Length: 406
Image 1 (tube, one colour):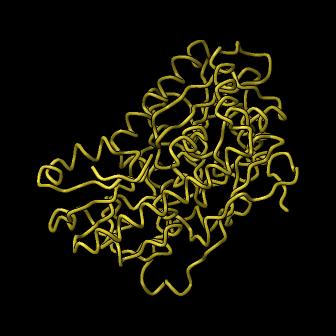
Image 2 (cartoon, rainbow, N blue to C red):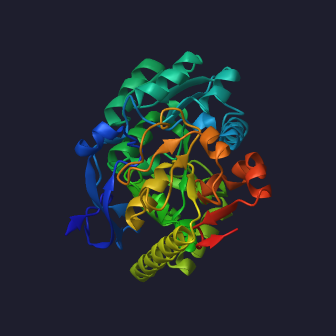
């Protein structure tokens, strides 16, 4: 029996994804024997409607000076975060004098640079020092610490209250949501806004995109769970904006209760979630069965291709691919290597399953018959770059929303 991280009620795991390594823990061969693993079990709290991991590695194991994710490597994400920043500036800063924005998990400054370029006061809070250094070199004010209530009070003393606290694909990483919510409520001005977006539970269940679940993602949020988590700390949802990023995300806009008009989107989304069954444990039991079916179909397909004497190469050594590889037991016997653009991952091996990671030059030098698309949420951008592979007869293997070859 475990306790819900939000409301402390008893919860029971409904599914285990087995022994999983650190999702971004790409490693050299001599490090195999010391690799860290944990049992990745998921639970749904029927009291506060929160989907969560019941255990999670320590933050220091996941976010550190060798963290292997840099947001700015994606052109589409640069565009997306520019639009995100413009929305904040145009809708929530328009009538404010000298507004101050704080971003949690600011990575390499991909979003904050838009505020800096428009001369807004800003501060990035980025625990991983290596990506924080990239932002600092751009002139973006960044501190490499974990956000907390204590840090919020320190920021207030040094820079004042924030008119907006923003983040993207970060809130789901933080196990002690109550401390974070308290810190944000403390940090905001009396009518400030919290705006964050995360992979959306409704999309994950609809698409069986179980690769959204890995060590960093201690939560996959719904509007109901966000309402319950932040409502106990004086913040209410004032708008909900669905996004296509990361295979389906939700942008949550919250503010101190009673300070802003609530958009009709909120009631509509809450009603849709009830209709989809996001507050029912039966929905998650069905999700487990769908995951098992997806695993069986993907492994069966890869084995058939191997028996035909054909080659498969993975495309995109993503954090999400770690869950798929280890849950399905896919190793270098089924996939020759994984091609990735991130230099820090190249010439290393994938966590757990130890598949070599190589550059795209290796992919192009000896193209396989099939490419397994791990970075499926960036498919449009990838296909723009890989037209030659498809034109020469190369086939793409998908596993979301179903296993198929195109």
